[in-house]
Length: 121
Image 1 (cartoon, rainbow, N blue to C red):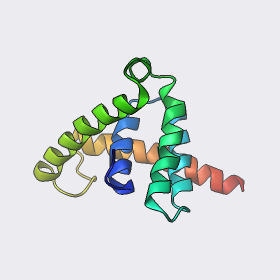
Image 2 (tube, one colour):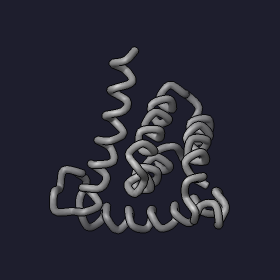
Image 3 (cartoon, rainbow, N blue to C red):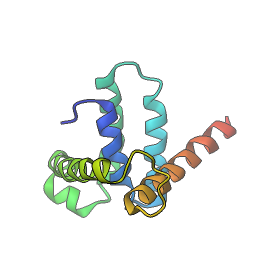
């Protein structure tokens, strides 16, 4: 479904923006765990496993089936990101862009949980 882990990560970050913070944090922990995995396919499997748990709270994902839902979301998000990459620029620091703002907020939520987990250890 995804050509590599980086593509999956870009899609998942956008996909997470509408999730409750608690789910964003769970995905953040999964992403953190993926960084310790060497094989790209294993990283994608690990992240997809976490997404499946969260999809149980998404009525549309249940109705479409998790794989179909993720595939449809992937296609839409990649089109949006392709347009964005051409028209916005590279930096997520651009404050007037809603996509950049959404990405930054989601990443802040994810990183907050990763930092908190490391501090607890």
